[in-house]
Length: 81
Image (cartoon, rainbow, N blue to C red; front, side, top):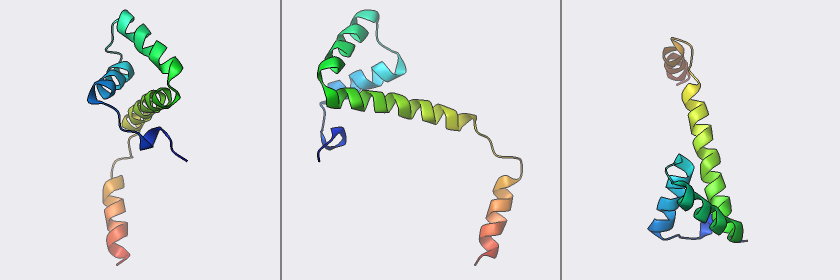
């Protein structure tokens, strides 16, 4: 079953998605792009997935391992050989 990941979009559309996700559109462009999203299910799903992905990446940036975790991990990996 085909989905939005199977489609290739023109680079201009990709730029619109990027600007939409990053909040780099003026009000008119944003409203116009959102109107396009209303009528194109695949493009809407792609744009919303990109937005959700950006939010997840921002959350991961906030997660920090305890000090020494990397050394403990490397030691554990080394000892498993």
